[in-house]
Image 1 (cartoon, one colour):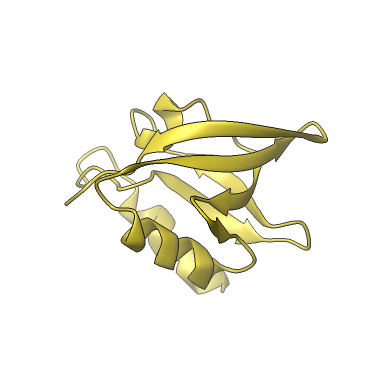
Image 2 (tube, rainbow, N blue to C red; image 1 turned 45 degrees about the vertical axis):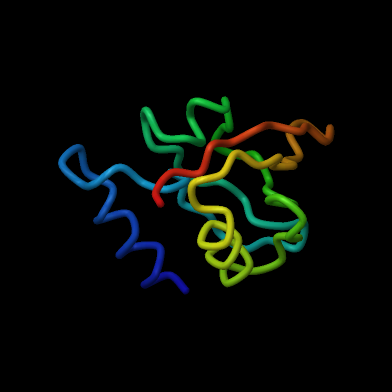
Amino acid sequence: MLLMVVLAAAACTENAPAPAFGVLVRETNAGLMIEVVRKNSPASKAELMRGDVLTRIGDTPMRQLSDYQAAVSRYRGQTVEVIVVRDAKELGKHVAIGGT
């Protein structure tokens, strides 16, 4: 799991193609914690923040990395509601997931 995060972090450079969602996450008991939000990404435009815990993208619960990957693929090119927990409060954000 750590290797996946390291490889994903290496791909987050200024010259890399625009990300579909724009975050690096890690699995926690509560959901997927956002570790990095890429500047000018769909996630940053929706004001997602480091430390937010992703609990749902569209109608897909976020329990593990494969849920995140499947949801980003499924909703690519669409604007969907994303549920995060920040400071013990559940927030709904709309994210335009990039790509076609």
